Length: 118
Image 1 (cartoon, rainbow, N blue to C red):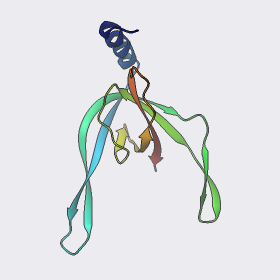
Image 2: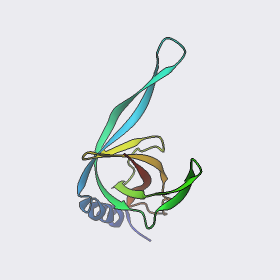
Image 3: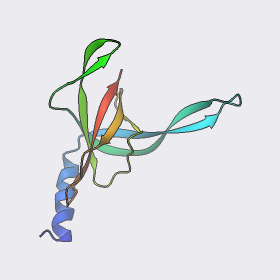
């Protein structure tokens, strides 16, 4: 069984491998006064991250055509507040979070699956 000190050391080592910076953006909806809403993306946090392509592209049926979609796994520090509706900006690239990968018993880093918004 890991001690608290062991877990802290592992998390520290995991954080050292995060070589990029990520802005976590969350949408806020405000009424436009005529029955609709306008979304504004606000930065909720700036954290270290690492971006890696998913193992293989997924195939989707779009407009009666098959399209390949490349997924991305973005690793963030342990316990980072990130939701499936958030967007992550890494440099000039923007990713939309699809979901979080299942945490193990001892989470050492937060990993989310994303698609790039082009």
